Image (cartoon, rainbow, N blue to C red; front, top):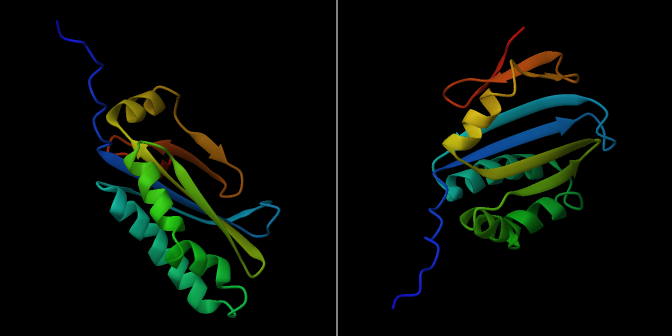
Length: 143
């Protein structure tokens, strides 16, 4: 007699990457935002690493420590492992007076459908936009 085990979960097929930069560490006003969808966890990590490295290059050496710690000290390895396990992960960084947050998460077609059923969009006060998810997974302003 065979013991039945649940089928192994298939690895995520897409990864959603988002970054929001706030004017201050109090996250009171959004000054910039970016997003992308990648096909691999490694590409998602690279998307964050490229941005973190660009920010770190502009910071005084003492302030760049946290950015380098995530990039070179293993934080990105832990994030890569989380994505491979199907878990979301994130990173925050203070740079000068601003604050950036990156969020990476596995993303499936089911997620896309669930979001499409929510409605026409979500108002982002800091951006003054009404964002909605398109069929190809991008956020677009629906004003």
